[in-house]
Length: 157
Image (cartoon, rainbow, N blue to C red; front, side, top):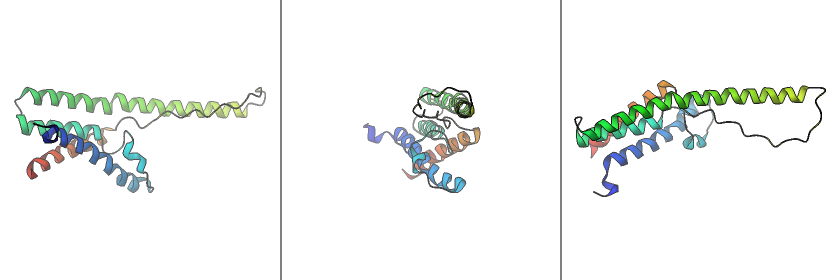
């Protein structure tokens, strides 16, 4: 079997691509502006992580069966990835949001302080990325999307 005939791999990769692609029109509908860069970003609706691991797990179920050790490994892997995407990575994004706000407030305080000694301006520090993880609904929609992609792929091929 060549890598190009590995259906679970191809379906999982397609699920990532498709989930990232549909973030663009969803963002356009919600924010009323086009942002093509969201294709390359993490976070957002739907979760491409969840889409990938659920598509992979569903494809492995088709290929190896629900009673196979390979399916068990994939299912546990999927749960860990989705838990991480909605738990740890989401909270890290929330922390980054607060840190960015604190930095802005501190810079404002420094500018407004009357007795603050003049210093040479420092280069602007890049803000921390806040869109790291997913809300639970983004993860669920991503998982459903991944399952549907696998089911449709196996129905067609």
